[in-house]
Length: 635
Ligand code: ZN
Image (tube, rainbow, N blue to C red):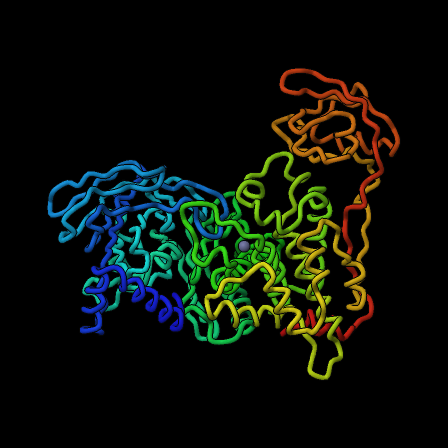
C-alpha cells in the first residue's frame, strides 16, 4: 500500500484526469458529496474456475466506457522483470456485453482490444478466460493445490482510466476440496463495501489505480502463514508448496526476517512507506527467483533453502534465501519508489529503456548482503566470503571488458534477460558489477570524507538523500542524479569515478580501495590444473561445453559451446574423470581432444594454459580498524 502522501499524489492525478474526462468528473463530484465512501468506476471479478485446467475466469465491468469504443489492453511485461512476455497470449477466450447485448471486440494488436462504440450510458463488461500454468514469480499459476497470479497476467487495463480506483472481487473455486482456501496479498480489503474481504478471506479488495492493482500479487490456497511486526508495520510470510519449515524452523525464519526488515526500515528512516508487507514464498524441488512489489514480494525457492527442525548455524542455502528476501525488501525503496525517470510512469506496452539498472539492481545487491551483516544475521567472515564471490563472478566473465554497465542496463531486454552461450563473453551483469560499483563508491566516499569534523559521508547517506529527493516525491532519477547527490553530500569530485565505473569497461581498483579499511584482496588459482578456458555441464553421461571463454585455450583450438568432449589423448573422457585427466598435464602441454559437434566427430589440438588466477580471497588485517568498524559494524 502506498503511504498517505502517495495516495494524495495519486488522488491529485485522478482529479487532473477528471478535468478532461466528463464521466470521471461526475464520479468525483459524487465522491465529494459523499466523501465517506469511494465510488468505483471499474470492478473486476476473478475466480479460479477450473483449477484442473489452469483456467481463471475474469470479468471487468466499466461503468463509464469511452462512448467512441473502449480500448482494453494487457501489459506486455511485468515491472521488475525486463523482458517482453506478451501475457495476452494466455487469454483463451474473450467477449463483451452492455445492457445484456453483446458488444463486438476488434483486435488492435497482440495485447489490445477495442469494443465497438456504445451509447456510453450503459456499463461495459468484459468476460474472459486466462490460462495460468507458469510457476514463476512473474506470471500466473493455477492447479488444484493453489492459485497464484500477478495482476499483469489477469487484469485488463481500461485504457484512459488508469488512474480510476477499482474494486476486485476475489472468489474461491467452487467445490468442497477448496473450502479451506485462504488469500494472502498486500491488497487492501474494500473496507467500506458490504462484501469487504476479511483478513485472508475472499471478497472485495480495492486499488487506487491500475498501477497499484498490478503491483499486488495474490496467492490463494492452504499456505503456511506466520506474521511479525517490524517497526510497527505488520509483516506476513505465506509459504506455498510442500515444505518442512514449521514450528521452531518457522520461528527462526520469522526472527531473522524481522531483524533484516527492521534494519532496512531504520536505514531509510521511519515511518516505513508501506502499511503492511507480505512475503509470498513458493517452494519447489529446485528453483530460485524473486520479484519486488511496493508492499510485497513473490519468491520462488527450493524447499531445502528454508530452515528445518534440527538446523544449526546458518547453512549456505538458507543464507542465500535470506539474501533473496533482503534483496526484494530493499527494492521496496530502491526501484519501487526511488525509480529511474524511464519508469515514471511505466509504459506497459513496450520496452522501457533505462541506463540505470546498475544502480537499482546493483546497489540493491550490495545492500542485500550488507543488511544481513549489519542486522547481525551473518558474520563479517560470511560477508567477506559473499563479496569475494561477487568479485569472482564479475572477473571471470570476459564480457565485462566489452560492455559497460550503462549499456548492459539499456540492453537488459535483449541481452541480460535472453542469455545464451555467448553471454559471459559479451555481457556484464548489472547486478554483480553494479554491486561492486556500490562497494567502490561507498569506500571512495568513506575514505574521502573520513575524519571530517562534520562527520563522514558514505553511500548510506546517498541512498537516504535519494529516498528523500526522489522516493518521497515520485520524481524519477535521471542519468546523472546519483553522481550529483553523491558530490553534493561529500564535496568530492566524482565525474571520473562514474564515467569509468558506469560507462567504461576497465576493472574497478578494489584492491586499492579496500586497503585503508584493513582488508587485503588476493587473487589466486583455485588449483594447479591447467586451463582449457571452458565451463562444462554434465548431460547424462556426456561432458558438454556450456561456455567457451573468449581467448581461452579451447577457443583458440576451435572448440565451441555445445561440443561434447569424448577423449583426451586417446582416452575416453567421463564427467567424473575429466578434471583428473586434465590435472595430469602442465600449462604449455598440447593435448588432442576428440569432441562431437552435433553428430560429427572432430579433432582438436589444444595448448593448455596456466590455471587462471580467478579466485578472490578477502582477509582482514589490522584488527579493530576504525574505518572498517564504522562501515561493517552492527548498526
Ligand atoms: Zn532485484
